[in-house]
Length: 55
Image (cartoon, rainbow, N blue to C red; front, side, top):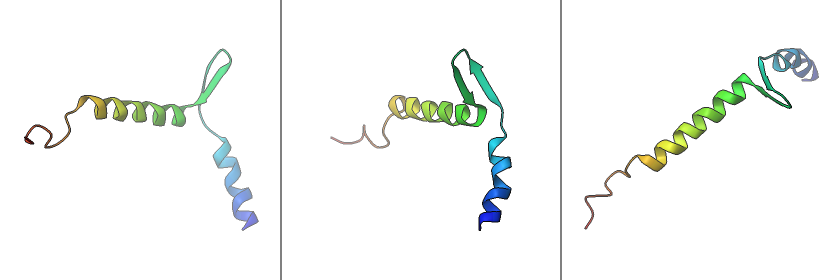
């Protein structure tokens, strides 16, 4: 099992990083954050299904 983890660690450490001064973020993490924000905004804006048919 230890060999599997050590073999996978170089692949995990590679990635594209974006830097703005003191802030550095991996591109994959930035994409996940943007998707989460878009889903949150859509959840606030879109009407709840069946909400207007209730009396």
